[in-house]
Each structure stands twice: as structure tokens, then as C-alpha cells.
Image (tube, rainbow over all chains, first blue to last red; front, side):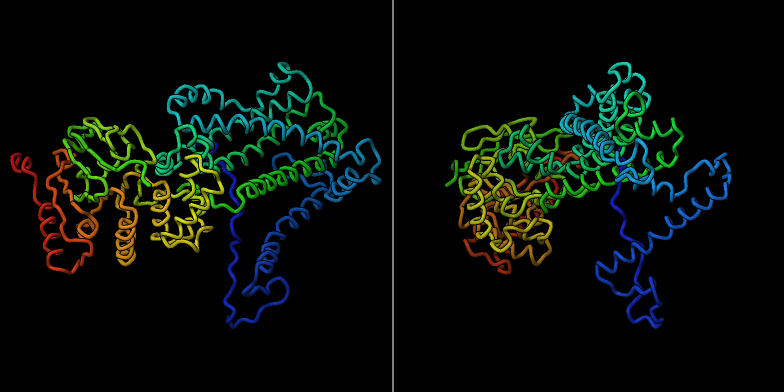
Length: 310
Length: 262
């Protein structure tokens, strides 16, 4: 059951830049190349400088490709795309209006809010069920033997394949989208929680038992705190999938939400709106992930957690 | 202070993990209240198994363990265990680690933390009550491990190679610390160690175990040697060295069964 666990997102790796020694005979060059022994601010600036060229290049190629109507191998007609500038205009118009002036102007927050509510509802519901179940399964071989075969049978069905059935089963509306988000978010949290719980050092459980903690209470006083890093990994994977399935869930019969917005944009062939919607969904995915990490940090309150994998 | 007097009776104890041979068998031993025994023997002789059975982490295949007349059925705070790898909770501070058992006993948070601070001070960790275990040296972590069980006033202290992970110098220092702690609390002590010198330094009696499943003979007690060296022991003194030598001979001499088999 480690298929999903291996897809854990990792913190951004420390930048691979190495500063040349301060006593280096080569004089520091001008501009961005001048990085010697630096403080955190300097290191951040150097990271930004390293990260910048690729997106700039991509934007430049994108713009040129659209302007000159390039045909990329694989049948990709770039002439069909909006230019980056057009997307930017659309993004501004979506947010504050006054540029394009159509029915989408200044409607961004309504769509964002509708999507956010659905994504968070499904995600929280999934976490609330998967974490306790995962803790119990991680500790009970009986429960694992009882549930794992069934779960392993259901899990390989792509959640997107549930979408048509969900629509018929639940009907058009919020619930159907929330159901898909829930389904997508449930398994990664469950799998990661089970694995994390199974890796809790037996010594800590012995210590708690010897200090007078009952079997059931140990789940709360030892197992859960020790499994937090793994649980959080699962939550982060789930959050990403939650957004993916939200868009699928919003594609049919819903008229508010980012998925609905880009679906409607497709119908009226507004590619700038489609790409603007994609950008917003990406930003939301990023922001909610950071928020989750921040939330965990606040709850942990500076406490060191058990290191993952030993 | 203690919840019981700390009289330990080990009666025909045996443990079988599967395979051909018992890991340990026919161990009968009586430890008087306040007495300190050290269990020594080659690795695999069952000395750790013995300790784990007394702690209640494992259930015996044969025989039983009685603490103050009551059979041991599982782990509990009347038998404080000190582990070689400390077993501290990394997400709790020193003070919270020591308070953990008190909180589990139902002591109010504020009072538990107050008592924990006292116990931290007793083991010389007064300045580190708010530190987290991973920031402490091995010796200091083990002081936390000792303080958290002493805070519960157990009837018996069970120590499984408590100083085994420490460097020689720290180990020496901690041995003196253990002597001091024993003098202060007077709790019955069962110490498992592979260091004969440590056993002679700390114990009233040294129990030598031999055999073990890997030798084809169940681990068993092969000798019990009283240590009559008084309170202040000098590891360099001839009588200390002589006793250590004598115990060393017991540890290294083969079991009678093995001789029969050979």
C-alpha cells in the first residue's frame, strides 16, 4: 500500500547554488553574479535569480509562438492559444473588471469562493474519516486484514471514472463535486496514515505503557503525535488531488466555481479565460498547500516531530 | 513513598518464541525490597527477555512473576523501565516527558509540571526543563529517562543496558549517579548489563545467565554471586577486581548441559 505514499510532495530542496569562497581571486562580477558569503536575504535573492530565467523563457517562447502561429510537433497549434498578455488582461479583468467588460468581469472571487468551499468541504470530510480509520488500521492487523483487500480493489479505479456515476447517483450540484473531492482525498490520507502508524517506534508504545497509559489512550498520546509527519504528507498529496477532482466535479451542471468557469469559457471559445482559470486554480492549489503546512506548524507550536523514515 | 515494598518473586519463568529452544527457562529468583541485582551474561542468554517479562512487555510461556505477591500481567507504573535507547517522546520537552506519567496517573497539569521540575533538578537537568530530547546528549537523555520513572515512585526499577549507548566517560559518571540515586530512593533495582564491572559496582548480587536459544540450550541462571563490598566501592581495589574476575569466569564457563552435549 505504498503506491501513493511514494508520491509525497517534498519541501523545496535547498538551492543547489554554492557560494565561491570569499577569498576567491576572481573579482565578483556585476549584477546577479555577485554572490559571496550571504545572509538569508542574500540567499533568497540568489534563489530568485536562479528560478527566474526558465519562466521568462517560457513566456517569451509562448508569446512568440502564438504571435507567429507556430505548429509544435504533436499537432499543437499555438495560434489557438491566447498570448500571455491577453491572459494577464483577463486575470485583471476577472479580479477587478473594467478591461474586457463581459459577464465574467470582476466575478473571480465568487468563483474562487464557491470552489474553495467545495474543495475544503470534501478535503476536511476525507481527512476526518481517513485519519481515524488509518490510525486504527495501522495498529490493528485484524482491521487491516478485514479492510485492505476491499480498499485495494476500489482504490485503482480512477476517481475521474466515478464522475459520471456520481452525477447520476447524487445529481447535479455541490454534493456531487464534494463527493468526488472526498473520494480523491480519502485514499492518500488513509494510506499515508496507515504507513506512518505502522512505523511508530514500538519503544515509544512500551514507554507509554510502562508509564501507565492504556492501550486505547496510547493511540492518542503516542501514535497520533508520532505519525504526524506521515499524516501531513498524505494530507498534502490529497489536497492536490482534491483540486484536480474539483475541476472535474464542477464541469457539469454547475455555473459557479472555477471548473464551471473554464467549462463555460470552452463553450464560448474564450481561451484567455480558460488559461486565466487554470492559473487561478494553480495559485489556489499552491496557496492552500502553504496554508496547510503553516497550519500544521502553528498546531505543532515549535515542537519537534518524529523524523520520517527513522 | 513507594506504592509497594518492592518484593519481586520470579518463579520458574520461561519464554518460548518458537523454534526448537526456549529463549529462557526455569528462572527462579527472589529480589528483596530495596535490593539491587545485576543480571550479566553473553548476548542472547535471555537477560533482556527476563527483564521484559518482569516489565510485562511480554507474557511468559511458563511460570510467573510476582510483585509484592501480585502476579504481573502487563506493563505498569509500579515497575519503572529505563531503556538503553531512552524511549523519550521527541515532541515533549524534558519537563513534559517527566510529567507524562504523572499526568497519566491523573495529577493535575500544573502540579505534574511542578513535580517534574523537581525531578529534573534532582538528576541535574534543572536548566534544561524546556529543552527537547534531541537537543540533549545521550547522558542527559538518559537522566530524563530515569527521572520520568522516579517521578512515579515505582516499587521496582528495571534498567535494560541503561548506559549501553553512552561513551566510556559519561558512562562512568552515570554509574556514580545511579549509585547516588539508589542511595536516595532505595528502590528495588534489576539492572541488565553486559559490563561485569558495572554489575559489581552497582549491585548487591550479580546474577549470571548462560545459554540461549542460539546455543541450543535455554537461557538460564548459571550463578548468583553476592557482592559484599560495602557502600563505597573502588573499582581498582583488589577485592573488587577479584570478584569481577570470579564473575567473569562464570560468564565464560560453559553450561553443564553443553558439556554433556559435546
